[in-house]
Length: 294
Image 1 (cartoon, rainbow, N blue to C red):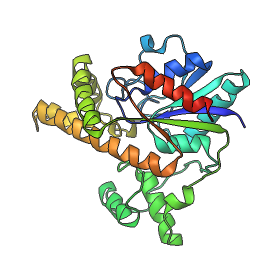
Image 2: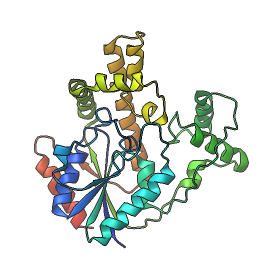
Image 3: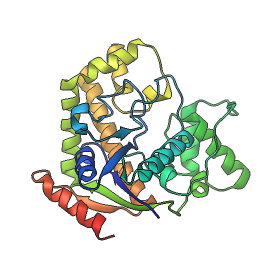
């Protein structure tokens, strides 16, 4: 077995900062595990790591796809495992960082996925209606509401077998020696931090970044999946004022953080670590203890 470090948690808890510190200590290289950071041009809303933050640590699977290209869990599984093996072959430590749980499980566990090819929709209903039907079957599904292909696949599987697709996809055999560190904090503090982070994103140019995407009139999965872009489209259309749209981003971000904690707590063996925002070096020390006491 070969060791892989994985850092999970919602936006704003310090995953990037911790990953850099651990990469320095354990001769590591970082692999993106966030489905939205795969795409070029999605920087501010996705909280993509900046060049200055990388501190010369190699980073992989960032900015590898154009906005109109499709990229599936199957694709990520192949790409991430390839990078893990490359890093291990150099006697270095792979460090997966992100909040997309299905990507992480697909990379690290014995998930068997099929490539999506020659996709033809088999349902006349709109995607929203199909998603509501899926929720009735599987209230805890992690399939994104806009991912019609996976929604249909889950419905077809249920109709054929009477079982939930999420149960079939559960895989509990690790391919590597893995230590998963989850960063957490008091919910009130986390939600305040998320709200402040959105305000900071606006200062960094979030509205301008979203406007460029809106003007391209491209409504691909890459653009409609992340929180922070589609919520601003009504503002550009003159339907809602900016403050209402920003509040919607904050609300969706808080809800997503809650779902992430629930998913990781049920799906993976996570070593949860309370973040010390005032003295982050303590958080780094605790993470190192977890890794070294494995």
